[in-house]
Image (tube, rainbow, N blue to C red; front, side, top):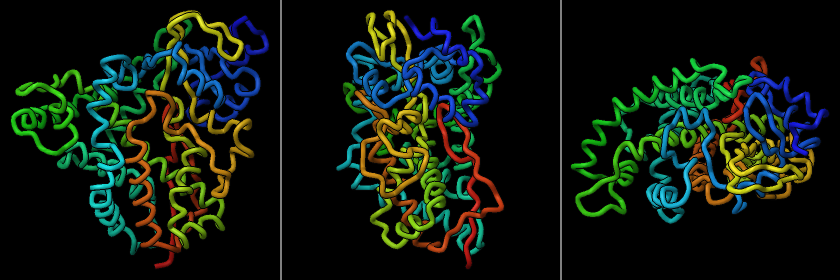
Length: 407
């Protein structure tokens, strides 16, 4: 019997995208308890919600990567997160060399620390700031933008691009016919892609003739026969993936970590007093509110039974890593941020051969940014006159974070 035949799961018919975007936790808590693998009508897909089922699907030889329909509409083909076999191997070989730990260690400090200091100088004497828009997101997008070779693209424009691509990618609601419920929801993403092409196409023209050390230049040339480059249409979908996921994740990861620490003032004080605790604080922040919450999927390559559910060949399953990271079978009181939680592997960066290629880079961007923030403003406090609202189902993070300090 499949979950769609179980009358006790009829409540899933009432789940809305607005509910998932504002606060997905109650829905996924119930899914974990009642149906770790369930068909969610508004998404038009099965959803894996526990750590065990997410890991099983992500690492099973009976599944391969597939992009969600909204993701495919946003990124196009071949996006690195939704391909397999030789194409996936080639795209990973294209992006991974610059993200290897030994390579990242060579330049990460010189890249990120000046960027963080530059943004801090803009407000450190003000006694107040909104950290998401003034620090966390700008440091994240500027670090990756410079790595990609987009030095002349304003940070606010990079933030605008990932916000528009985010809303397009997560425009996943379907109607009773399986069609997109809001086709207009992709317009912003299309606008962003047109702007990206207008700016990046001339850069690609230059990199083809005059390669440099920027990441996109390497993507064009590395591993290709002399005199040949990868076609721009082949790499653009992965550029879009980076301009959304890779730009969003460090910014929202550090913002969520800060919100978590503000909820435990004694732990915030510990981290400020001992910066070596920052990586541990970040790891807990990523578990507590995973920036990439439910944005990846797999498709069955044969009939398979998972969590007691029979799936025919060709069945897509969305992996809700944000839900898995709140699994009470793995974590005690998972909705509580706790710096001293026993270290357990989380799924914020995914699992299997499609796990995030930028784990090391993202962690160090967050580490350096928080080191600089706590050194410059050690008496940081959350402005309790302003609330903290999180948003997002596919990608999730605080929409704002107001803070104060005595100058």
